[in-house]
Length: 179
Image: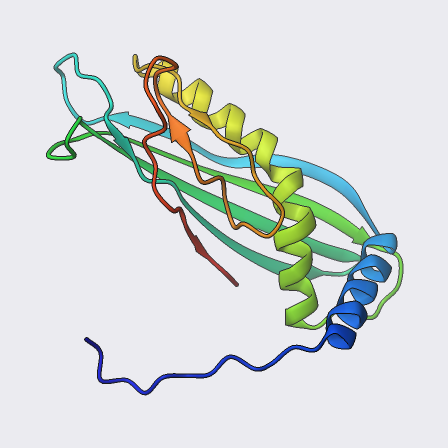
């Protein structure tokens, strides 16, 4: 048990939610997707034996940076794959996706609005590339293809993933780190 004091989350009123949603809608209306690119594509088999994947822990981290006429969002994905029971690491898959957006006006959004944009818009732009990368890289190193579940609004990453269609999902709550 931690000795750190409990921190109370600030109370958000319905009017603040409405204002925040309106600010996000306005921000989205001023942006456009310019480019999506894969900047890291890596898979490594950690054993020479034929082995099946039993557990997958998906970790998604994100960041952004402003540039002259817009901004970039980056989503880094780490997917360590373990043997059934989790005792041995089988493989490691990593990829990074950068989505570039233009911004029609010069005013830059604050960090809170940018975080909302990344969680509710940019991650959904990057997700097909993340999904395809995990699927493709797992098969390229001789494993069953990894399939990740749906990304739901308000979630930082999919809550399910599996490496064999005959088995149930093998991932717990995914870790997501912010800006």
